[in-house]
Image (cartoon, rainbow, N blue to C red; front, top):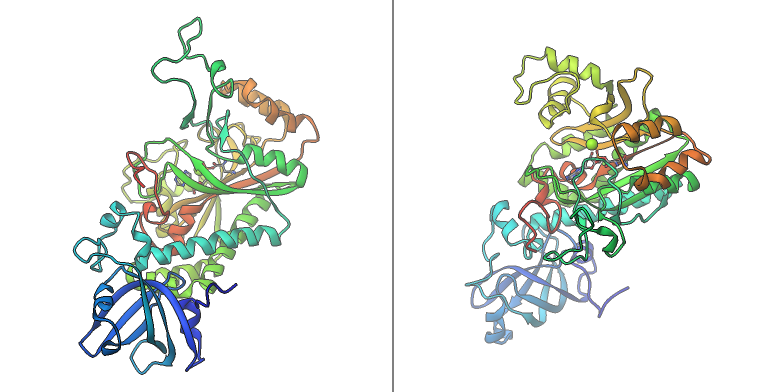
Length: 465
Ligand code: 4AD
Ligand code: MG
């Protein structure tokens, strides 16, 4: 639907309707010129490129033109003209310009180009107006859309799982508490502990670390479901790959085993990368030029490569044999660090890797136990530049095995009784995985810090905007 006769810059740049009267609205990127003619580069966020507005200076009010500086917002009406200038095919010869808002050139932080990403993080409220963040936000949008499209086209149902929960799905204890109790004077029980029965929900609750447990409830009814929502982890990892609030995509499939799970994960991620190449080419070319000249090649190469699949145990042997000195020493049983994961992907196999059969002690309680008594049917997808991008598993569908693992780990049964009932009533083999959405965006955009691929990052000591 057209709004007030306005055409988006994206559509104007494709138009060959020379001589037509058009209207465009947006923000000034630059203005240059002399006392006879001025050129304004206007951007409305619909595309990385600007449209050039040509202004016959003597025909306009001098005071109005003086207000047009970098960052000002305008409505421009004029004639669409084939451009003789370099680097653009069309421009608008302005007839009427309305200034909505000015941006004082002394104080507007984006007056100059070329700010560092670190500085832009400090002005996260304005950074969407830069080329880089415009590109990242459009790619983020396209990837969200593609996720829904992939699952919708493949018979999955989008399931909304709760943000406030009473369980710790991953068992890592990294949760943000949700409470309405008075923090200065909370009610206490007879042992002097905070009495959560008096809290809003009558029990201790937290922000979810994963929608998986609820997704399993959906999958054991609708067969294939997925969640796509924010997740919260209070892990104090100040790394370029961790956020305290991130978005996760979690498909869950009844009747799927670990092989099916791996095949789905590989197909899904290739689909998303192909979608980005097909639909975000302007933005990806910009990012390729500005940040990472290997980006486009890396994206294309992923699509044609079979991911290497091997067991955790085999991976440990490779790491132990390698001559590379790792910061974290390698031995069977360790949780792999990103340096190990990236060595396997970038140095050893030179392609994405899927590791399976991890030691049960470093994985969550719900994973299907292998017959060796030591490992579980987990799978992690490891990517170049990123390390772990997907974590998943076949789930333990056997009630007895699951409950004995829950007891071994001292997980309170009163918190998971409802989950256990899926294994009591009509249990089925099933599998699923979680894709870290920001890690996907890191990979697709070639950005190197996860704080630069989400509009308003939440990380330790950082919740300003
Ligand atoms: O491996 P994780 O912890 O797996 C789960 O939460 C399972 N419940 C998923 C499932 O089987 N349904 O997390 C899944 C993915 C990781 O591979 C990583 O990409 C991302 O989520 N992730 C994070 N991304 C950003 N910041 C963090 N702190 C993250 N923690 C995990
Ligand atoms: Mg994981």
